[in-house]
Image 1 (tube, rainbow, N blue to C red):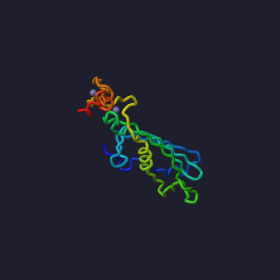
Image 2: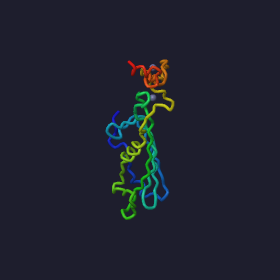
Image 3: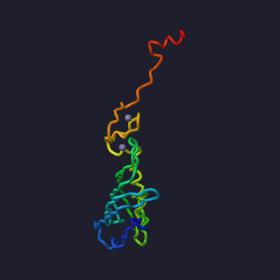
Image 4: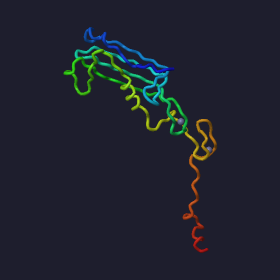
Length: 174
Ligand SMILES: [Zn+2]
Ligand SMILES: [Zn+2]
C-alpha cells in the first residue's frame, strides 16, 4: 500500500468563521503508514480534535500503531504498539504567539506528520520485550524457552575453581 503524499494534512479554513468553542474530530486510519525513513507503522489509527479558541485553533491528537522491534530476550521480531500524542496551538496572529505556539498559515493548511512521528519515536522502548513473561533463550543451547524447555539449568555450570579444591595444594608439591 502506498503512503499518501500528505497523510496528515488538515484544511482548517472552515474553522475561521465558526464561533469560539466549535470543535471537530478528524479520524485517521491507515493499514500501513511510513512516518519517516525506516519508520513504518501498521494498523495505525487515531483522531485529532480541533477546537476554535479566541486566539487560534487548538489541535489535540492521540494515535497508535504497530512498529516492528526485536525482543531483547528471545531475539524474535514482534509488533510493538507505539503511542503518540500531540497538543498544538496554531494562533491567527503572530503577536498572540508564545514560544510554543505555531502560526496558522494563510491557507489554513497544517501537516501533522512531524509531530506524530516525533512523539511516536519517543515511545520506542530501549529494551523491547515481546511480552512481559518472555522466557528468552537458553544460555546453554539457545533454545527459545517460550517454545519448550530444553532441560538445561538457567545458567551454565561454573568451572570448578582450583583454589578452593582440596587438592589445589598438591600442584605445588609436584
Ligand atoms: Zn521475547
Ligand atoms: Zn538449553
